Image (cartoon, rainbow, N blue to C red; front, top):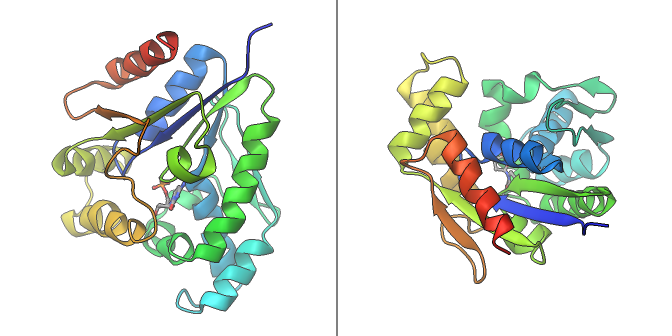
Length: 220
Ligand code: DC
């Protein structure tokens, strides 16, 4: 019997960590967890409840009370919150602009980290989990931990392509640079912690990035 394998991948917005993590999971026959989708889904929940993003107590209550279900199939990603399928909605600009209201509150993070650990533990063959604090907080004991980075111009260009290829510069700056700045107040995802492999994907294609991580797994 082969051992369960847990791979943790962190990185800033637009570093390519979602596509890379999904590709690695598919290549190795593992589950996949997009933790950013969980932060985004609870953002939908507090918006639906009419909560003001600056009302921390209510944002925490909406997070803790959220009925959250997320797919761990890398080939079929969906997420539901309080019974609503928000798979498409979590990528909309309104959610991207407000998600830091959740990710900058320690009590929200603690609740989501607990849910993420339960999902990781439940994956029978193992999982690739990606986000901002997976290598350091959620799964510091993972078999392989990678920090995937890329230069800011490349990350903004990739986010532009993700969003259809014709996005206003101000929106891209907000979605990539402003959000990273806000999110990095509680979590460090710009320098690799001890034991975390730093992979700079600025000049790598997606298949090359996936290959690099699969090679790291095979080398362990
Ligand atoms: O990776 P993403 O853009 O979908 O993440 C959405 C937001 O959630 C982003 O603002 C950072 C935050 N996040 C986080 O703080 N910790 C994680 N493990 C994953 C995402």
